[in-house]
Amino acid sequence: MTAGLIMGALQGGFSLGTGNKFFNFNSTFSTGTESQIQVTYRTAGTMSNLWIRVTTGTTTGSSTLTLRINGANGNETLSIAQGATGAFQAGQTDNIAAGDKINGVFNSGDNNIQISIIAVTFTPTTTSTSLSKCGYNSFMGGNTATFFMSIVNGGNNQGGSESLSKFRMRKSFTASNCCVNVSTNNSSSPPTIKSRKNGANGNIAVSPTANTTGIFEDTSHNDSLVSGDDYNYTFVTTDNQFQVGFVSIELTNSNGDICLGTSTDNNFGGATFNTSVTNYGGLAGDVIADTTESDMQVTINASYIFSQLVINIDTNSITSNPSATINLRANGGNTGVVISAINNQTGILVDNSHTYTSSSSDLMNYQIITGATGGPSMSYRQLAVNANFQSAAPGGGGPSYQHFDAAVSPKKKHQNYNSFGGQMIVFG
Image: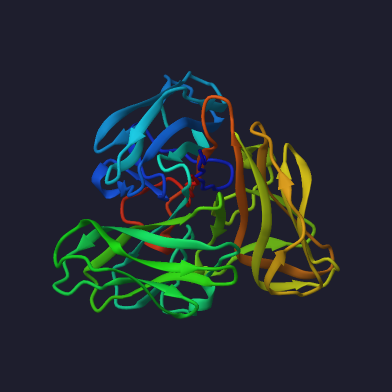
């Protein structure tokens, strides 16, 4: 058995508002329209360990979190009492068939509750399969442009350099089962969403039907990826009548490897860190800068060997040596998996030599420390780590995690959606 993890994050927490808010475990958004956030799973398996972290509790009433399968409640559900904070986990399981449409629903007692993480474990039925389910979310389109997208959360790179959207692979995977949820489509000739490998078109292509919204897939083609490959998506709009809500893809291998990645909005610059700061980020989702480490910690619920920490620094005016130190953290301490950037250093940096073996109870996250001289800042586009599954926690496999945006971003032109999450990665 190989247990899987999905995850995303944004600093501090966010409020969804009252009433039923549907969210996609690969999505940045929540909404009252469930069909706009569903994602198709083409790998059968079991979901368990539904998990949430609450940073600020309600002042009125309790809240509930429930897994949804094909528009109906699954078995997994948990309740959060009025005023309660911390981490909560459900004890039920759900069987997922290939082709099921998966999402969650959250019902809050009031607008005061703040959430930083939602998680769920996915364990594939085929025991030799390791699965990372990567999601990219940013309601892109609505104008005439070329869009480049990371395979993990982070916004679009409209009309910009493709290099800012590339996700650097550090293990070998097969990418397949691309799923696109089209939120707006009044176009008679909608664009094809394509995979990109090392700056050229890959084999995967999803072609939405004219004037039709909903889920479209390519279940026939795949891309073979090895360490050092850069991977992303693209599409070109010819009118302002088309928007993509999210794109997800399944990365599989038979070695027990999964990847956890963060990226940021390429249209508006990378995540910026000033001199002399210590910030924390979730293992996947948006690139963020949170000053409270506990907000970004997630329970791994399985044993993994973590390695191949990688960062893509796009700007750096800090002259200290090191100008930035990036640590993989467990239980509030450094794991020894670390990257140090020298003065003004930019580009892709990798820790090729250090590993960390987690226990199932570990609380894990990233830490970013910047130097004191020069500046004013450094920024990066991608921060990721790979993990090799060793053993599941008692009672189930490792959870998948998601972190969430705290507010709608006017830069991304989110249209009447409540911001909800970051990227999620499923391991299996």
